[in-house]
Image (cartoon, rainbow over all chains, first blue to last red; front, top):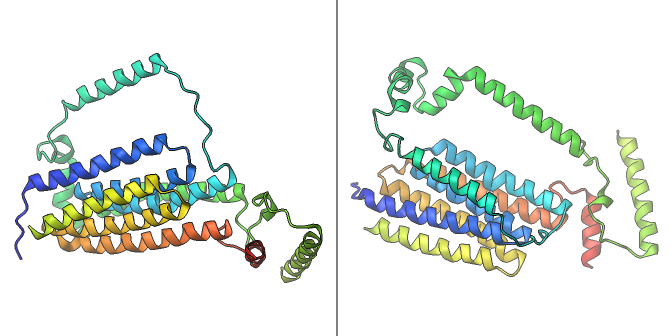
Length: 221
Length: 99
């Protein structure tokens, strides 16, 4: 099968993706209903994953989709359920100094980007020295077809091990702080359901049920 | 040519889905918009793989579909039980609320 795709078509597709990204980002800033912001952030991650794939960074795209659209959506939802459903209204007002700093920083960054090598330039420093060495030696050294995997898991294996250790420690710390480490869930469920106010007789039976449940748990453990 | 037309159609569908996610009056509109946006991403990923001449990316598209499905289940479960691992007591409480 042959493929007749002009590079301009890919560019147009990328422009469409970037426009959708921009629209999503601006809406996320402006919407006050937090659930909509959470869903839009999931959409934003999916779009940026798509853009990463079109830039050939498939592994980054996969991480973005798994973490951004999958896990962080659920994390933000759980955070939202613990706090409020709506963002507090922002006091309108203009901060000329902040705008000035943003404009200056942005224009300096854009000016600096004109000094960068062209996209995909084989003579760029990122591709020239160590990169060339990795490309030449990976097939014989590691025998993994994906260069990024070879660098992350073999050439920089100890570094990756340290990163994994840091992330594991952070995860354990968060789990201990939130108290979701036990089998029963650890924390008191009543804290999350403040609006449930059962009638007095129902409440009494519920309390009795809780007592038996905790007694059973005690017996089990 | 076929792939280009398909890509344009998917981008248009993405715009419409994004509009539903932005405007969507109820929670379920937004959940559904997020889910179907994920599906559109999977489709566009496949089309892009064929447009650039590397259909190997189809594997990644499949994995995206898997993540999308699990994510939607997680969101809906969260809203039903307010927790990812509800105890039976929570489930009973919720059902008592519904009745």
